[in-house]
Image 1 (cartoon, helix red, strand yellow):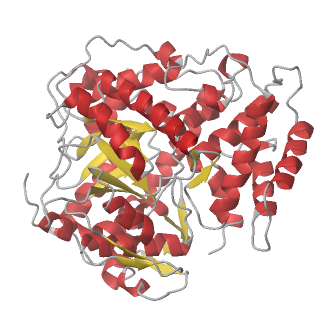
Image 2 (cartoon, rainbow, N blue to C red):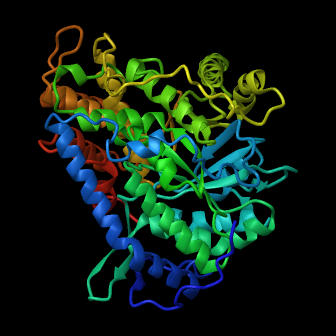
Image 3 (cartoon, rainbow, N blue to C red):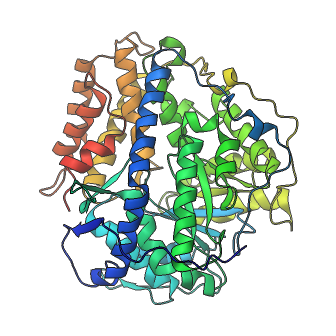
Length: 543
C-alpha cells in the first residue's frame, strides 16, 4: 500500500440541499464536512453514473431483441493473463465462513453483532426500506456500533446491548447505482438540480464518519456492491474508492469491496469486474435471488424457452444457476478472491418446531452444496441458522480460514450454459397465487418501512418480491397457463389480487391498497418497470 498525501480541493461547485426533516441526532450524520464530501462525490462521479445507467438500458434492449450476452472479445486479454491477482481479504476478513445479513436499525444491528457470525452485511439496500428515517438512523446505528456506544430500548422496555466479546466484521451494502435519495437535492455547477444518488449518499456518509475509526480498531471500511452489471460500473466504484482514500489521506487499497454477482450481464464479466477493482477487491458473492430476477427481466420477452416455472422450483441446481455459481467459484479462486455463497430463504420459527426443523434441513443441504463446490463462506438471515451453516463449512474447511487454493480447474462454463433456463416443470395455480400474495404482502410492509419480512416461513426482501412480480408479468405476456390449463391473464391475476386482499388481516394504518396498486403497475402493466422500487419510492413511500 502507498499513502497518497495530496488531498483533493476542499470545496466544490456542486451543492447539496437536505429536504428531509432533521430529527434528533441527525446533525451528527449530516455534518457540513460529510455533506461536502458527498457533494464532491457527486461532482466527480455523478455524470459517469448516468452514463453507466444508459449503458444498462442499451444492453437490456439488445438482449430483448435477440442478442444474447457472451464473454467480451475486447477484454479477452484480461481473462487470458494468468498473473494478476486482487487485493484479497483485509484485516478481519480472512475467515468469512458465515455472514449474517440484515437491516441497520438499532435492534437488528445489536442482534447481528451478538450473533456469532464472522461478518455482518449491514444492509442499506434490499433489506432496508429507504425511508428517510431508515437511511439516516441506519447510519447512526452503524456510527454508534463502531464506537461501542449502541444501546436500544424497545417500546416494551426490553434493553438491547452488544455483549459479544468478538463482534462480526462489518461490511456495509449501499444502495445500487440506479437508486436515488429523494430527500437530498444535488445542484451542479450549471444550476441543474436532481435527486442525489442513493449509492453515493450511503457510501459517502458511512465512509466519512467511520473509515478512520474502523482502521484504528484493526478492521477497515468494507463494502458489498450491489446490482453491478459491467466492468465499467466496477471501474466507477474503484475510482470512487481511490478518490475517497485520497480525501481522508489513508493508504490506497484500504477499502475492500465484495461484488454481488446478481445480474445476468455481470456473470459474463466476472474477471473484468475483479480486474477493475483489483486494488480493492476482496471477493464476489452469488446473489441468487436478484440473479433469478435479472434472468427474467432480460429474457421476459424472448419466448417460451426462457419462461421459468414456480419460483420454488428455481433452485440452485437448475442449469443456469448451476453454471453461474460454478463459474463464480472458479473465477474468484483463479484471482485470489473469496467466493461467498448466497442466502437460502428458509428461516426458523421458534414457536413451530416442525417449521424450524424443515428450515434447518433445507439450509444445511444448501450450505453443504456450497462448501463442497468450493465457496469460502455463505449468508444466513437469522442467528439460529449460524451454527447450521457453520457446521457445513467447518466440515470442509476445518481449521483453514478459506479454500481459495481450490482452483476448480475442472469447470468449463459456456455462454449457452449461463442462459439455459430449461427446468421442465409446470407453472401451478399455487405458484401464481404465491407470487401475488408475496408480492403484495412484501410491498405493503416495505411501504411501512420494513425491508426484510418473514412471510410463510421464508425471509423476503426486495429481490424476492421482484421475482414474484416479474414472473407474473412474463407469464401473462408469454400466454402461459397453469398445469390445469387455466390461462394466466390480467383478469385472472386481478381475481387473485382481490383474493389476497381478502385473506390478509387489515387495520387502519395498513398500506395494502397502495401495495396492490404498486403490484398492478409492475406486474400487470403493458410496460415493464426495471425495478418495482423506483416508482414505489417516488410515489408511495412516505418519509
